[in-house]
Image (cartoon, rainbow, N blue to C red; front, side):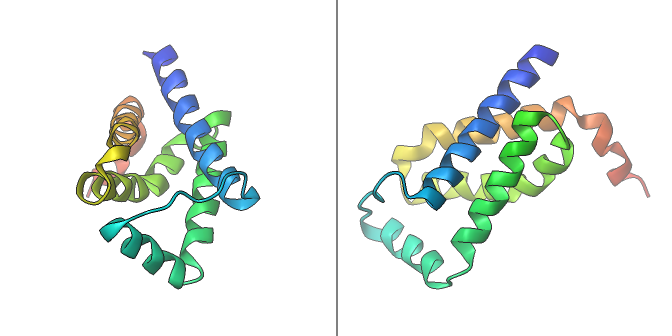
Length: 124
């Protein structure tokens, strides 16, 4: 199970690193969005701060996953982002659902793997 956890956290980390580096370096043109997904994305961009904050968070958590340092903390930080990614691709843009399901499943698997680290959070 240890090897599986290393593979899953590394793949997850590389995915977050790739997404954040592409965003900041503008390596690829942004894909043309349509419908509700376009409205949702424009709303996030209109805030001015949200997308850079999101990508910085993804970058830091991606580094944590790839390096293997602070993985339980990175999971707690990235979990709301992954849940949002899952719902966005479930409701607005189903084409990204396989990646969203991989991220969600990876979070669940890694949280289970590190479950002893989270046990004190549930004590009174």
